[in-house]
Image (cartoon, rainbow, N blue to C red; front, side, top):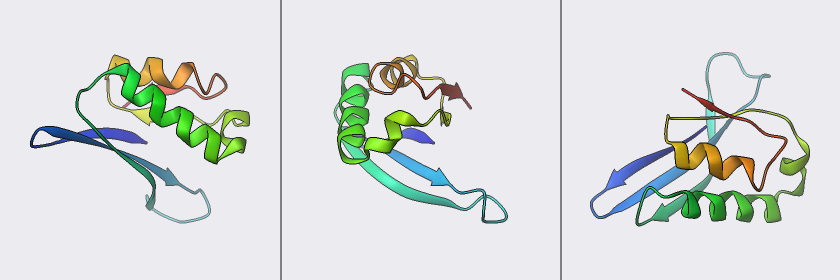
Length: 88
């Protein structure tokens, strides 16, 4: 799940992971990104960096849940075509 939060003049996007082995909804933080605007180019770079550092991420078809921000949904499709961005 990735969600941007406003922190003053900046935004922070957090990617969390939920493993099915744990009961309940335990989310584990995977990556954080500070950025200036809610723009697709920042999120696309974020997912490109994740793909470079976690090569298996581009092979999975697991969904990435996000808010209804169109920039995030489109940013997921380019670097991670097998993953789908679902709105929360």
